[in-house]
Image (tube, rainbow, N blue to C red):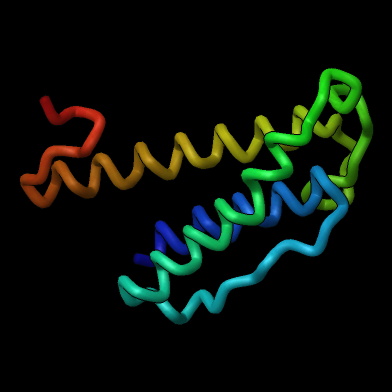
Length: 107
């Protein structure tokens, strides 16, 4: 639950940086299934319109990313995608350690 919650928090933060909008924040102590599912849904609801509205003209627009560093909007969004993929990799290893098959490996 904590890993999924972390993923939702970072994704929302990245979308906030890329768009200049205030990102939702999630209580990192609430790692129960219903709280985590709500946080993941809220992160997607916040981020989906930002990804959908991004245009080619936005690709090189400079935004402030983590640590106040200048990055392009698309570079910032890409950082979020990369982080999500890394988080999924962590979860896949965890599932395999629990003798479970990750969703992307299921037939």
